[in-house]
Length: 461
Image (cartoon, rainbow, N blue to C red; front, side, top):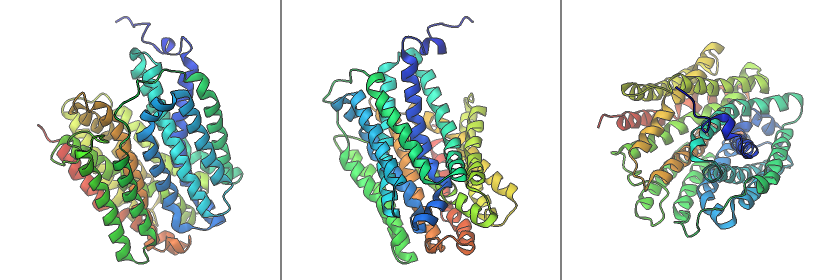
């Protein structure tokens, strides 16, 4: 069959689109890599600034900022214009990086992470707007494929960049490096992202739901400092309940964050979003705490720990490519297998991270990544297939919001488990050994709930 020259990579990059395409890829890189770059440098941050109890906040705070920013990006691009809005987003992210790089104490470091999350969330959101406005429809499939590829590469390289920079310099250099990249992005944005925004007067931003969502995530994060196991568990429960209330509020709100039925677990939409939230939350302990545990118990360097974390991302990418063409019954089978593998990975990691043979830890990381690789695209496609045309736009953006919310909540929950194991008192062999078990055991019930929801969303109609 003859290829259409108007739907090729050469045509996509022609007509002045190549610089825009590269800028969008840089924005995706900044969002993905910066969200994970702390995975391999937190032990060094803790040794320098103190605050081992705040490990989870470095990730949870970033994602809270990213959630709030990403959900408001469409409306802000209408209000201020795409180029100016993206310029501001890059400067905000650069400012957050500078705050963390120059932080005199852990409070400033964590505040910088929240600001980075805001800037990064807006960069990611404005990049999606730019794709819709600046590229012909015939190119959208290729552009989104490239975005997915860049995201996958960034999730591998993010922790590795952190480990490599620490190996040859100082952890603060990581944030100076990202500040320079964000500054270059922001300076190019007004020239390359010139576009007429959609007509103003759209539905607006669901601030009520976003505010309640933020309260729920912060409540879980505050459980780290509740002063006792039962208080911590109670705050986690309250936080999860508040997050669940978001769906109830959304169902009656004039400006919706989620599609119709998103809060009903009896629907494909509701069970699908819950499965994504629960499985993502259950996976966060590995990327946050495994590097520190491996460095303490096994003598890994930051770079070596980064490579092991990268196993998860590489397994995700390879498995996703392997099943990308699955259709029919195999679509459903791969989705369910992915959820099963994620639960199995947590059991393997809980048993082996602290003292088992390293091959078992690598296997656990690979199973964790493969679980998402086998299931994530099919979950997304299944949810989108049941949405109405009216809900398709918010439904697709909600997939990212649900994932980021799960990441923030999971980071906070794993932080509670680690701190109750003694991590808050400092990184030692005893605290690392205890955390190597409970960081994973604590989220197995959440993973099982995600497995149940996965089964429900893939039931035959």
